[in-house]
Image (cartoon, rainbow, N blue to C red; front, top):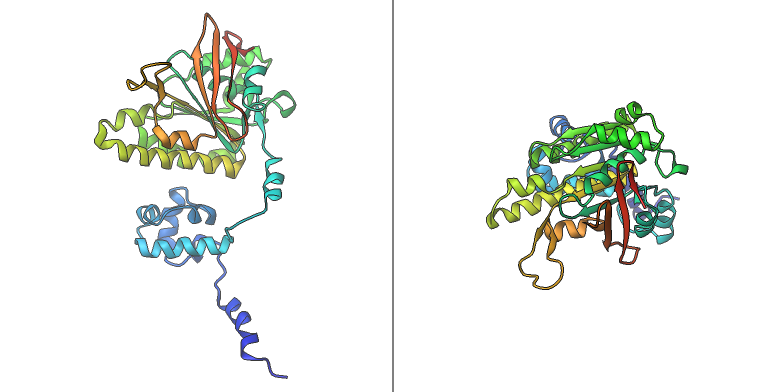
Length: 329
């Protein structure tokens, strides 16, 4: 019996649909455009699917309309859509945590600094933000049973605060080989906000090669604050900051690593009563950070941490110490 025309239609449609496995298979992307995209860090279909047409046009110079077709094709090939919550729950079982060194602080944020998430600490100078970054860069190298992830750290230093001498102190206190610990921390000194963004965009090779499980950015906002001055530049600054923080989140999700960022503060003159300390970065950073912690200095070595925002933990406070041996209760 001959097949009816309507029976053949779905099969024919399936045959006509091009199979997309690589960047060159995407409509509007030739070899030259694909090479430009790879150089900019857009080396898989997932990244193309999550980008915007203007962003893609800026990198590959293929025109906004062609970029729209390219993104649509990438999304179709990945079948991006809904999934059941139990699958997400299953995926969440692979989330790891890095101990801060203080049981109180770990408990406040749900067991330590989480992978697939951005943990932000803000506070005035000498509140312990950088010290926590150093401690995490050491602790991430411990095995999981000791509160680490058995991997290396990527440290983006924007304020010339990175001190290998401090890492040696912390490693010795933790009973680790200081030389080995130093060799597992890859440090980059960002000279301005654009360089800072490039360092994150180019981080993938390093992550794969060096088994990076933690990215530290100390501080996230220093260069953005210096490069974009005045109210007129605020829109540009926030747009760039938003792109930067989303690039970090993408790396955290893709490689199941933790991101720890520090943030500067200012005194808000509009707050007449209570603490006027306000983090830089506005709503962009406030929404992007998964965990937001406000640190302030107490007497002598004591520091007070307040959990300001978290998707699954209640607001609360704890006290910890920053000593020569590191962060403790």
